[in-house]
Amino acid sequence: MAEAEKKNMVQKTIIANYGDWDLGKTKSINLAYMKLKEISTIHEILHTDKDDVCALLVINGVKVGICSQGDPRSCQKGWMKTLYDKDCAIILAACRYDGATAELIESYMDKGYRLFRTCNARIYENGTTPRVAPKGICDRFNEQWAEEMARLIESWCYA
Image (cartoon, rainbow, N blue to C red; front, side):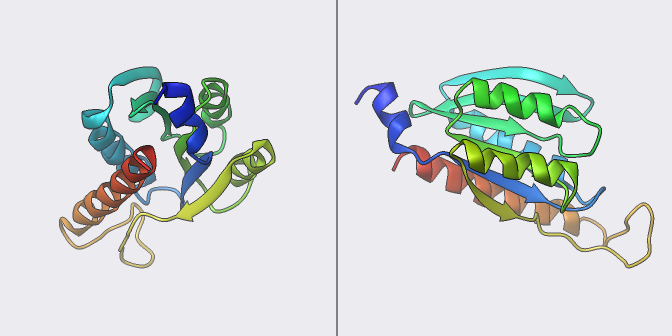
């Protein structure tokens, strides 16, 4: 089957990892990205900013975009446009619960994308800044979330 035919079979989808600041959205998305990178045939980093990445992966002929920026006044708008312009069938993106970042992600539904909302697993002590969690558990939660998101995306690329 030709690459264009595979791409057309995948329903355009954004998986948005929603949450407030400092809850591990970027870390979780980057972990999923690293897992997906291992199975991709093409991997292109489009932008980076500190710990954030915007990347294009091709898995079984399906274009998958990664946008780990999801904070207000970030590069999220430009990075999402880049992934849209690259014709990504699936985009994994970070997003706040509401405001400009949520509005931006939701605007892609008008461009033919369905939207799945998710939150990486999290635990932290109430009222702590920075957020404090029992030692090591957040890393394990993020790893589990990333594994499940990578499996889900991979399954769509081979449907």
